[in-house]
Length: 466
Image (cartoon, rainbow, N blue to C red; front, side, top):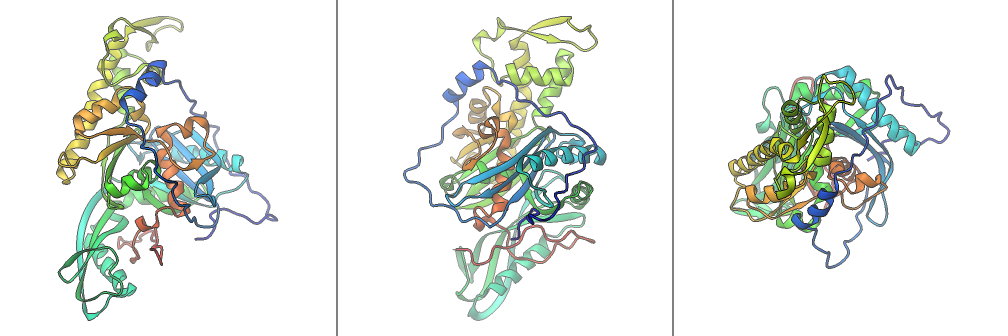
Protein backbone atom coordinates (compact mmCIF):
# COMPACT_ATOMS: atom_id res chain seq x y z
CA UNK A 1 0.00 0.00 0.00
CA UNK A 2 1.38 3.42 -0.84
CA UNK A 3 2.28 5.98 1.77
CA UNK A 4 -0.71 7.97 2.89
CA UNK A 5 1.15 11.27 3.32
CA UNK A 6 3.10 13.65 1.14
CA UNK A 7 6.74 12.61 1.53
CA UNK A 8 8.56 14.69 -1.14
CA UNK A 9 11.06 16.78 0.88
CA UNK A 10 11.24 19.37 -1.93
CA UNK A 11 7.49 19.88 -2.07
CA UNK A 12 6.26 23.02 -0.34
CA UNK A 13 4.49 22.12 2.88
CA UNK A 14 0.84 23.08 2.75
CA UNK A 15 -0.81 23.84 6.06
CA UNK A 16 -4.33 22.59 6.54
CA UNK A 17 -6.65 25.54 6.27
CA UNK A 18 -8.58 26.08 9.48
CA UNK A 19 -11.85 27.96 9.62
CA UNK A 20 -12.33 27.67 13.36
CA UNK A 21 -10.10 27.36 16.38
CA UNK A 22 -11.56 24.54 18.48
CA UNK A 23 -10.95 24.16 22.18
CA UNK A 24 -8.99 21.05 23.10
CA UNK A 25 -10.83 18.51 25.18
CA UNK A 26 -8.84 18.61 28.39
CA UNK A 27 -8.32 15.56 30.59
CA UNK A 28 -10.28 15.56 33.83
CA UNK A 29 -9.19 13.64 36.90
CA UNK A 30 -11.17 10.45 37.33
CA UNK A 31 -11.07 10.82 41.08
CA UNK A 32 -9.06 9.05 43.74
CA UNK A 33 -11.82 6.57 44.44
CA UNK A 34 -11.82 5.39 40.82
CA UNK A 35 -8.06 4.82 40.88
CA UNK A 36 -8.18 2.91 44.16
CA UNK A 37 -11.07 0.62 43.25
CA UNK A 38 -10.53 -0.09 39.55
CA UNK A 39 -7.65 -2.52 40.12
CA UNK A 40 -9.73 -4.52 42.60
CA UNK A 41 -12.65 -5.11 40.28
CA UNK A 42 -11.26 -5.23 36.74
CA UNK A 43 -9.33 -8.32 35.68
CA UNK A 44 -5.76 -7.55 34.67
CA UNK A 45 -4.24 -8.81 31.44
CA UNK A 46 -2.61 -12.22 31.92
CA UNK A 47 1.21 -12.17 31.76
CA UNK A 48 2.66 -13.39 28.50
CA UNK A 49 4.53 -16.70 28.65
CA UNK A 50 6.88 -15.64 25.89
CA UNK A 51 7.44 -12.49 23.82
CA UNK A 52 5.29 -12.17 20.72
CA UNK A 53 6.95 -12.32 17.32
CA UNK A 54 7.41 -8.88 15.74
CA UNK A 55 4.71 -7.91 13.27
CA UNK A 56 5.52 -7.11 9.67
CA UNK A 57 4.04 -3.72 8.89
CA UNK A 58 3.28 -2.05 5.62
CA UNK A 59 5.85 0.52 4.60
CA UNK A 60 4.93 4.14 5.10
CA UNK A 61 3.31 6.63 7.42
CA UNK A 62 -0.43 6.38 7.99
CA UNK A 63 -3.14 8.71 9.22
CA UNK A 64 -6.34 7.66 10.97
CA UNK A 65 -9.36 9.54 12.29
CA UNK A 66 -11.74 8.38 15.00
CA UNK A 67 -14.92 10.43 14.60
CA UNK A 68 -16.89 10.11 17.82
CA UNK A 69 -19.95 11.83 19.19
CA UNK A 70 -18.03 13.52 22.01
CA UNK A 71 -14.45 13.74 20.72
CA UNK A 72 -12.40 13.33 17.55
CA UNK A 73 -8.94 11.79 17.57
CA UNK A 74 -6.39 11.81 14.76
CA UNK A 75 -3.21 9.74 14.90
CA UNK A 76 -0.31 9.80 12.45
CA UNK A 77 2.10 6.92 12.85
CA UNK A 78 4.08 4.05 11.40
CA UNK A 79 4.99 0.45 12.22
CA UNK A 80 8.39 -0.21 13.78
CA UNK A 81 10.72 -3.17 13.20
CA UNK A 82 10.23 -4.38 16.78
CA UNK A 83 6.51 -4.90 16.16
CA UNK A 84 5.22 -1.79 17.90
CA UNK A 85 3.27 1.09 16.40
CA UNK A 86 4.79 4.53 16.86
CA UNK A 87 2.64 7.65 16.95
CA UNK A 88 4.39 10.58 15.26
CA UNK A 89 1.65 13.11 15.97
CA UNK A 90 -1.82 13.24 17.44
CA UNK A 91 -4.77 15.59 17.55
CA UNK A 92 -7.60 15.53 20.06
CA UNK A 93 -10.59 17.86 19.92
CA UNK A 94 -14.14 18.15 21.11
CA UNK A 95 -16.50 16.67 18.52
CA UNK A 96 -19.03 18.90 16.78
CA UNK A 97 -21.79 18.15 14.31
CA UNK A 98 -22.02 14.46 15.34
CA UNK A 99 -24.90 12.81 17.18
CA UNK A 100 -25.17 9.11 18.01
CA UNK A 101 -22.36 8.45 15.56
CA UNK A 102 -24.10 10.20 12.65
CA UNK A 103 -23.15 13.49 11.00
CA UNK A 104 -25.96 15.96 11.65
CA UNK A 105 -24.18 19.23 10.73
CA UNK A 106 -21.64 19.10 7.88
CA UNK A 107 -20.16 22.54 8.53
CA UNK A 108 -19.59 21.92 12.24
CA UNK A 109 -18.20 18.44 11.57
CA UNK A 110 -15.83 19.81 8.93
CA UNK A 111 -14.52 22.45 11.33
CA UNK A 112 -13.89 19.85 14.04
CA UNK A 113 -12.16 17.49 11.59
CA UNK A 114 -9.93 20.28 10.27
CA UNK A 115 -8.91 21.29 13.79
CA UNK A 116 -8.23 17.71 14.88
CA UNK A 117 -6.26 16.66 11.80
CA UNK A 118 -4.43 19.98 11.68
CA UNK A 119 -3.18 19.51 15.23
CA UNK A 120 -1.86 16.02 14.39
CA UNK A 121 -0.21 17.30 11.19
CA UNK A 122 1.55 20.08 13.08
CA UNK A 123 2.82 17.62 15.70
CA UNK A 124 4.06 15.12 13.08
CA UNK A 125 5.30 17.83 10.66
CA UNK A 126 3.48 16.06 7.83
CA UNK A 127 0.41 16.68 5.75
CA UNK A 128 -2.23 13.98 5.36
CA UNK A 129 -3.95 13.46 2.04
CA UNK A 130 -5.56 10.05 2.67
CA UNK A 131 -7.01 8.71 5.88
CA UNK A 132 -8.52 5.61 7.51
CA UNK A 133 -11.78 6.34 9.34
CA UNK A 134 -13.99 4.48 11.81
CA UNK A 135 -17.56 3.46 10.98
CA UNK A 136 -20.19 4.38 13.56
CA UNK A 137 -22.74 6.03 11.29
CA UNK A 138 -25.48 4.59 9.13
CA UNK A 139 -26.88 2.02 11.58
CA UNK A 140 -24.27 -0.67 10.86
CA UNK A 141 -25.51 -4.26 10.80
CA UNK A 142 -23.73 -7.61 10.97
CA UNK A 143 -25.01 -10.58 8.93
CA UNK A 144 -23.85 -14.07 7.90
CA UNK A 145 -24.17 -15.53 4.41
CA UNK A 146 -23.30 -18.82 2.71
CA UNK A 147 -22.11 -18.67 -0.88
CA UNK A 148 -21.53 -21.70 -3.12
CA UNK A 149 -19.98 -22.27 -6.51
CA UNK A 150 -19.20 -25.39 -8.59
CA UNK A 151 -15.55 -26.38 -8.99
CA UNK A 152 -15.99 -29.51 -11.13
CA UNK A 153 -13.49 -31.86 -9.55
CA UNK A 154 -10.39 -29.68 -9.96
CA UNK A 155 -8.16 -27.82 -7.50
CA UNK A 156 -9.52 -24.67 -5.88
CA UNK A 157 -7.62 -21.59 -6.99
CA UNK A 158 -7.50 -18.04 -5.75
CA UNK A 159 -9.81 -16.93 -8.55
CA UNK A 160 -12.41 -19.40 -7.25
CA UNK A 161 -12.15 -17.89 -3.78
CA UNK A 162 -12.65 -14.41 -5.22
CA UNK A 163 -15.70 -15.54 -7.19
CA UNK A 164 -17.39 -17.28 -4.27
CA UNK A 165 -16.86 -14.19 -2.10
CA UNK A 166 -18.24 -12.00 -4.90
CA UNK A 167 -21.30 -14.25 -5.02
CA UNK A 168 -21.77 -13.86 -1.27
CA UNK A 169 -21.40 -10.11 -1.48
CA UNK A 170 -23.99 -9.99 -4.26
CA UNK A 171 -26.38 -11.93 -2.05
CA UNK A 172 -25.66 -9.54 0.82
CA UNK A 173 -26.55 -6.48 -1.25
CA UNK A 174 -29.56 -4.59 0.05
CA UNK A 175 -31.02 -1.47 -1.56
CA UNK A 176 -29.71 1.62 0.22
CA UNK A 177 -26.92 -0.24 2.06
CA UNK A 178 -23.16 -0.27 1.45
CA UNK A 179 -21.06 -3.33 2.29
CA UNK A 180 -18.14 -2.25 4.49
CA UNK A 181 -16.54 -5.59 5.42
CA UNK A 182 -16.78 -8.99 3.76
CA UNK A 183 -14.92 -11.36 6.07
CA UNK A 184 -14.66 -15.10 5.33
CA UNK A 185 -15.02 -17.03 8.58
CA UNK A 186 -14.71 -20.51 7.08
CA UNK A 187 -14.92 -22.63 3.97
CA UNK A 188 -16.24 -26.07 3.05
CA UNK A 189 -15.08 -28.31 0.21
CA UNK A 190 -17.95 -30.64 -0.66
CA UNK A 191 -19.04 -32.10 2.71
CA UNK A 192 -15.84 -31.23 4.59
CA UNK A 193 -16.38 -28.19 6.80
CA UNK A 194 -14.04 -26.04 8.86
CA UNK A 195 -11.53 -25.43 6.07
CA UNK A 196 -9.37 -22.38 6.76
CA UNK A 197 -7.74 -22.09 3.31
CA UNK A 198 -9.23 -24.21 0.49
CA UNK A 199 -6.61 -23.36 -2.14
CA UNK A 200 -5.19 -26.49 -3.72
CA UNK A 201 -7.96 -28.81 -2.50
CA UNK A 202 -9.90 -30.89 -5.04
CA UNK A 203 -13.69 -30.75 -4.81
CA UNK A 204 -16.94 -30.54 -6.73
CA UNK A 205 -18.33 -27.56 -4.77
CA UNK A 206 -16.78 -24.74 -2.74
CA UNK A 207 -18.79 -23.05 0.02
CA UNK A 208 -17.78 -19.87 1.87
CA UNK A 209 -19.26 -18.67 5.16
CA UNK A 210 -19.09 -14.87 5.12
CA UNK A 211 -19.49 -12.24 7.81
CA UNK A 212 -20.78 -9.05 6.17
CA UNK A 213 -20.96 -5.65 7.86
CA UNK A 214 -22.93 -2.98 6.01
CA UNK A 215 -24.29 0.51 6.67
CA UNK A 216 -26.71 3.00 5.14
CA UNK A 217 -25.29 4.27 1.85
CA UNK A 218 -26.49 7.83 2.45
CA UNK A 219 -24.60 8.03 5.76
CA UNK A 220 -21.40 6.65 4.19
CA UNK A 221 -21.64 9.18 1.37
CA UNK A 222 -22.16 11.99 3.86
CA UNK A 223 -19.06 10.88 5.75
CA UNK A 224 -17.07 10.80 2.51
CA UNK A 225 -18.39 14.25 1.59
CA UNK A 226 -17.38 15.91 4.85
CA UNK A 227 -13.90 14.41 4.57
CA UNK A 228 -13.52 15.72 1.01
CA UNK A 229 -14.60 19.15 2.24
CA UNK A 230 -11.80 18.82 4.80
CA UNK A 231 -9.30 18.04 1.98
CA UNK A 232 -9.02 14.36 2.92
CA UNK A 233 -9.64 11.19 0.92
CA UNK A 234 -11.14 8.24 2.79
CA UNK A 235 -9.13 5.17 1.77
CA UNK A 236 -10.35 2.74 4.44
CA UNK A 237 -13.54 2.56 6.48
CA UNK A 238 -13.35 0.22 9.47
CA UNK A 239 -16.02 -0.82 11.94
CA UNK A 240 -15.40 0.99 15.24
CA UNK A 241 -15.89 -2.18 17.29
CA UNK A 242 -13.56 -4.09 14.97
CA UNK A 243 -10.86 -1.44 15.36
CA UNK A 244 -11.18 -1.44 19.16
CA UNK A 245 -10.75 -5.22 19.18
CA UNK A 246 -7.51 -4.94 17.19
CA UNK A 247 -6.26 -2.46 19.79
CA UNK A 248 -7.23 -4.01 23.14
CA UNK A 249 -7.19 -7.79 22.55
CA UNK A 250 -4.05 -9.90 22.41
CA UNK A 251 -3.64 -12.77 19.96
CA UNK A 252 -4.67 -15.42 22.52
CA UNK A 253 -7.92 -13.61 23.29
CA UNK A 254 -8.79 -13.30 19.62
CA UNK A 255 -8.08 -17.00 19.14
CA UNK A 256 -9.74 -18.41 22.28
CA UNK A 257 -12.67 -16.00 22.17
CA UNK A 258 -13.46 -12.59 23.63
CA UNK A 259 -16.16 -9.96 23.28
CA UNK A 260 -15.19 -6.29 23.06
CA UNK A 261 -17.77 -3.79 24.32
CA UNK A 262 -16.77 -0.27 23.29
CA UNK A 263 -18.80 2.18 25.40
CA UNK A 264 -18.38 5.42 23.49
CA UNK A 265 -19.95 8.83 23.85
CA UNK A 266 -22.94 8.45 21.53
CA UNK A 267 -22.89 4.73 20.72
CA UNK A 268 -21.93 1.39 22.21
CA UNK A 269 -20.46 -1.14 19.80
CA UNK A 270 -19.85 -4.85 20.28
CA UNK A 271 -17.39 -7.16 18.50
CA UNK A 272 -17.18 -10.91 19.07
CA UNK A 273 -13.84 -12.55 18.23
CA UNK A 274 -13.03 -16.26 18.15
CA UNK A 275 -10.72 -18.66 16.33
CA UNK A 276 -8.75 -15.67 15.14
CA UNK A 277 -11.74 -14.13 13.36
CA UNK A 278 -14.29 -11.37 13.80
CA UNK A 279 -17.51 -13.36 14.17
CA UNK A 280 -20.15 -10.74 14.98
CA UNK A 281 -20.65 -7.02 15.49
CA UNK A 282 -23.52 -5.01 16.94
CA UNK A 283 -24.17 -1.29 17.42
CA UNK A 284 -26.38 0.42 20.00
CA UNK A 285 -27.34 4.13 19.81
CA UNK A 286 -26.61 4.76 23.49
CA UNK A 287 -23.43 5.84 25.25
CA UNK A 288 -21.79 8.05 27.83
CA UNK A 289 -23.38 11.22 26.46
CA UNK A 290 -26.79 9.84 27.40
CA UNK A 291 -25.57 9.45 30.98
CA UNK A 292 -24.45 13.09 30.90
CA UNK A 293 -27.87 14.22 29.66
CA UNK A 294 -29.59 12.17 32.38
CA UNK A 295 -27.45 13.90 35.00
CA UNK A 296 -28.04 17.36 33.56
CA UNK A 297 -31.80 16.81 33.59
CA UNK A 298 -31.96 15.41 37.12
CA UNK A 299 -29.64 17.99 38.68
CA UNK A 300 -30.67 21.02 36.53
CA UNK A 301 -27.10 21.69 35.44
CA UNK A 302 -25.47 22.48 32.12
CA UNK A 303 -24.13 19.62 30.01
CA UNK A 304 -20.55 20.74 30.68
CA UNK A 305 -21.17 20.73 34.43
CA UNK A 306 -22.88 17.34 34.23
CA UNK A 307 -19.92 15.92 32.29
CA UNK A 308 -17.52 17.25 34.93
CA UNK A 309 -19.55 15.69 37.74
CA UNK A 310 -19.85 12.36 35.92
CA UNK A 311 -16.14 12.15 35.17
CA UNK A 312 -14.90 13.23 38.58
CA UNK A 313 -17.49 11.73 40.94
CA UNK A 314 -19.54 9.31 38.86
CA UNK A 315 -19.96 5.59 39.53
CA UNK A 316 -22.20 2.80 38.33
CA UNK A 317 -22.72 1.23 41.76
CA UNK A 318 -23.60 2.74 45.13
CA UNK A 319 -21.21 2.40 48.07
CA UNK A 320 -21.80 2.82 51.79
CA UNK A 321 -20.19 6.26 52.00
CA UNK A 322 -22.04 7.80 49.03
CA UNK A 323 -24.94 9.11 51.13
CA UNK A 324 -22.65 11.14 53.37
CA UNK A 325 -20.34 12.49 50.66
CA UNK A 326 -21.51 15.89 49.37
CA UNK A 327 -20.72 17.35 45.95
CA UNK A 328 -20.86 21.02 44.99
CA UNK A 329 -22.37 22.01 41.64
CA UNK A 330 -23.59 25.02 39.66
CA UNK A 331 -27.24 24.93 38.54
CA UNK A 332 -28.58 26.42 35.31
CA UNK A 333 -29.95 29.95 35.64
CA UNK A 334 -28.33 30.72 38.98
CA UNK A 335 -25.82 33.50 39.45
CA UNK A 336 -22.15 32.65 39.12
CA UNK A 337 -20.79 31.65 42.49
CA UNK A 338 -24.22 30.51 43.71
CA UNK A 339 -23.51 26.83 44.34
CA UNK A 340 -25.65 23.90 45.48
CA UNK A 341 -24.66 20.64 47.14
CA UNK A 342 -26.04 17.16 46.49
CA UNK A 343 -25.06 13.79 47.86
CA UNK A 344 -22.94 11.49 45.75
CA UNK A 345 -25.67 8.87 46.20
CA UNK A 346 -28.05 11.05 44.19
CA UNK A 347 -25.45 11.40 41.46
CA UNK A 348 -24.91 7.64 41.27
CA UNK A 349 -28.66 6.98 41.30
CA UNK A 350 -28.93 9.00 38.07
CA UNK A 351 -26.04 7.17 36.40
CA UNK A 352 -26.78 3.57 37.35
CA UNK A 353 -30.03 2.98 35.39
CA UNK A 354 -28.53 4.10 32.08
CA UNK A 355 -25.41 1.93 32.49
CA UNK A 356 -27.58 -1.05 33.46
CA UNK A 357 -29.81 -0.47 30.45
CA UNK A 358 -26.81 -0.32 28.11
CA UNK A 359 -25.29 -3.54 29.41
CA UNK A 360 -28.67 -5.31 29.30
CA UNK A 361 -29.03 -4.27 25.66
CA UNK A 362 -25.56 -5.68 24.98
CA UNK A 363 -26.57 -8.95 26.67
CA UNK A 364 -29.76 -9.16 24.62
CA UNK A 365 -27.94 -8.52 21.34
CA UNK A 366 -25.42 -11.25 22.15
CA UNK A 367 -28.22 -13.65 23.08
CA UNK A 368 -30.08 -12.92 19.84
CA UNK A 369 -26.93 -13.58 17.80
CA UNK A 370 -26.18 -16.87 19.56
CA UNK A 371 -23.21 -15.54 21.55
CA UNK A 372 -25.02 -15.24 24.87
CA UNK A 373 -24.66 -16.78 28.27
CA UNK A 374 -23.58 -20.19 27.01
CA UNK A 375 -20.18 -18.68 26.21
CA UNK A 376 -17.63 -18.24 28.98
CA UNK A 377 -15.19 -16.10 27.03
CA UNK A 378 -14.19 -12.91 28.74
CA UNK A 379 -15.59 -9.49 28.00
CA UNK A 380 -13.19 -6.60 27.46
CA UNK A 381 -14.66 -3.18 28.17
CA UNK A 382 -13.25 -0.13 26.45
CA UNK A 383 -14.36 3.37 25.48
CA UNK A 384 -14.68 6.43 27.69
CA UNK A 385 -17.89 5.36 29.47
CA UNK A 386 -16.23 2.12 30.62
CA UNK A 387 -13.95 4.16 32.89
CA UNK A 388 -16.76 4.92 35.34
CA UNK A 389 -16.12 3.27 38.68
CA UNK A 390 -18.15 0.09 39.09
CA UNK A 391 -18.90 -0.56 35.41
CA UNK A 392 -16.67 -3.66 35.40
CA UNK A 393 -18.42 -5.48 38.26
CA UNK A 394 -21.83 -4.50 36.89
CA UNK A 395 -20.90 -5.88 33.46
CA UNK A 396 -19.64 -9.12 35.00
CA UNK A 397 -22.96 -9.54 36.81
CA UNK A 398 -25.25 -8.68 33.88
CA UNK A 399 -23.26 -10.47 31.16
CA UNK A 400 -22.30 -13.39 33.43
CA UNK A 401 -18.72 -13.33 32.12
CA UNK A 402 -15.26 -12.47 33.45
CA UNK A 403 -14.53 -8.83 32.61
CA UNK A 404 -11.44 -6.69 32.26
CA UNK A 405 -10.80 -3.12 31.17
CA UNK A 406 -9.07 -2.81 27.80
CA UNK A 407 -6.46 -0.21 26.90
CA UNK A 408 -4.40 0.19 23.71
CA UNK A 409 -1.68 -2.47 23.38
CA UNK A 410 1.58 -2.31 21.46
CA UNK A 411 1.51 1.39 20.65
CA UNK A 412 4.04 4.02 21.70
CA UNK A 413 4.02 7.79 21.44
CA UNK A 414 0.48 8.44 22.66
CA UNK A 415 -0.02 11.22 25.19
CA UNK A 416 0.10 9.83 28.72
CA UNK A 417 -3.66 10.05 29.18
CA UNK A 418 -4.20 8.32 25.83
CA UNK A 419 -1.79 5.47 26.51
CA UNK A 420 -3.60 4.69 29.75
CA UNK A 421 -7.13 5.40 28.58
CA UNK A 422 -9.76 3.19 27.02
CA UNK A 423 -10.94 6.29 25.16
CA UNK A 424 -8.10 5.93 22.60
CA UNK A 425 -8.77 2.28 21.75
CA UNK A 426 -10.59 2.86 18.45
CA UNK A 427 -8.00 5.29 17.10
CA UNK A 428 -5.16 2.93 18.06
CA UNK A 429 -6.92 0.03 16.36
CA UNK A 430 -7.45 2.09 13.21
CA UNK A 431 -3.71 2.77 13.09
CA UNK A 432 -2.98 -0.95 13.53
CA UNK A 433 -5.37 -1.75 10.67
CA UNK A 434 -3.89 0.90 8.37
CA UNK A 435 -0.37 -0.36 9.06
CA UNK A 436 -1.34 -3.96 8.26
CA UNK A 437 -1.81 -5.64 11.64
CA UNK A 438 -3.52 -9.04 11.70
CA UNK A 439 -3.82 -9.36 7.95
CA UNK A 440 -5.93 -12.50 8.26
CA UNK A 441 -8.80 -10.19 9.29
CA UNK A 442 -8.69 -8.10 6.14
CA UNK A 443 -11.53 -8.29 3.70
CA UNK A 444 -11.57 -10.86 0.96
CA UNK A 445 -11.08 -9.78 -2.62
CA UNK A 446 -14.46 -8.95 -4.12
CA UNK A 447 -15.94 -6.49 -6.59
CA UNK A 448 -17.16 -3.07 -5.61
CA UNK A 449 -20.45 -2.93 -3.68
CA UNK A 450 -23.45 -2.56 -5.95
CA UNK A 451 -25.24 0.52 -4.66
CA UNK A 452 -25.80 3.06 -7.43
CA UNK A 453 -22.94 5.58 -7.76
CA UNK A 454 -21.09 3.52 -5.14
CA UNK A 455 -17.91 4.61 -3.46
CA UNK A 456 -14.88 2.67 -4.56
CA UNK A 457 -14.14 -0.43 -2.53
CA UNK A 458 -12.66 0.66 0.76
CA UNK A 459 -10.62 -2.29 1.97
CA UNK A 460 -8.64 -4.69 -0.27
CA UNK A 461 -7.54 -8.27 0.14
CA UNK A 462 -4.00 -8.79 1.41
CA UNK A 463 -2.74 -11.45 -1.01
CA UNK A 464 -0.27 -14.13 -0.08
CA UNK A 465 -1.42 -14.30 3.54
CA UNK A 466 -0.41 -17.27 5.63
